[in-house]
Image (tube, rainbow, N blue to C red; front, side, top):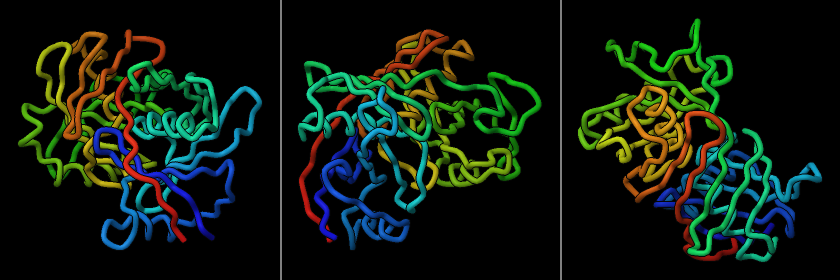
Length: 274
């Protein structure tokens, strides 16, 4: 099997993107893990697969696989790369693209300046919808992690996230707390762990330890979850610039309704792999 692919990134969060519309694709967790290796393979945080839709009201089906081969529900940086990929490869002519994912439907719009706005849908904050083990819904939960108590927000934006407010993201203990939160027993499907520093009401800094990947240079859904957490707790305004290690995203959430995320998507190179 010889597959054409494109290497892309969104603020350094990098992807191997495969067209499953015009070529036959057979994947396995072992194969994805092999390709994800940065020394012996292509190297990426996640693999994105473009497939035909299963419903007539969608343009494509969008599937996301972590570097460990596990399939996940959503990826905001990947969604922006997905939109540029299908447009640049002439799989669609419209600049507004409707896709189905395991985490729900998305609408993507390629702007005139080349950036992509993603309608990420409504955040879910009920514990059973995240999923997160708690008696009642709250803006903040106390959770015991490595013999210390953290105050976190728990939110699903197509995939589960917890957000911890920190004084300084540069000194936050992401390497130690990230894995412990990812596999915490109160998150039955594991979780993406975000660490947020509030600069002012319209600017934050963020680091994210992604489920099945580790810390990445950027996480679109993590940026959305952080802003939702900030709005729900009264810390942030409705439009926020999120600075991640790889660059900046703009997130808008009015306190209800859908989240809008805008940011870049960059093509790195084309390749063929056996």
